[in-house]
Length: 280
Image (cartoon, rainbow, N blue to C red; front, top):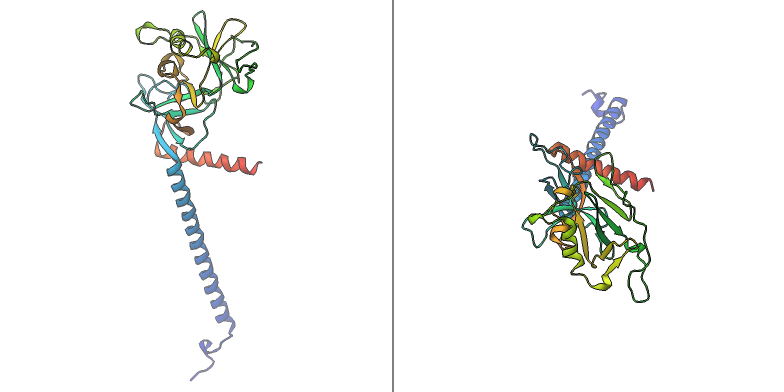
């Protein structure tokens, strides 16, 4: 028997190299499998969290143009979609989905005043303007009544951002250039005074130095409008919306939605979140 065969020589160089390669392959394979497993566990946990905390809506109609469905024309029926965070904090300027008790369908609008803010609608020629006094700027007298004077800027305008959405001055929000007409020929201004001013308690009203009558938004309610002022049924039609009617705030917008765009927008959103976290 040939005992010089390499299988019988325990520490031959060739056998040692072979064992080293086997161990390296074993470790590489298992580490890769563990990384893949951890990735899928993290993805599953995130997907479960995302599914619980978000709802997906396809946006129909034109009441939020140009922010949403800006491409809809007679020949083009493409639509946008949104992911709504049902646990998000609702604040001024947020786009929200509302499950209004007086409407059978969910609607999507922008929050332009929250509880404690004061709002009014004014008309100048053929233009309507909404003004807001933020609650942090409200001055009350010893009886808890709004006091002081304001400088209203009737030339305040919505400013378009790169996506065609809007950014707002903290106190003044312009309306648009076309007077909106509700059913029956009632203007939005008349509807505002009939629905909000007439029903408000005196202590919730404030008349500014130039005669504008402001009304206080009740606590736990919001005043919402569509970005497309002349073609939107919103708080001017339905009244204030209770916070209990708010499904959540729009966190991710998917323009011209498709599966690929949905995935891309979700990844982009969380990529920005990670960037902001590490930029602190």
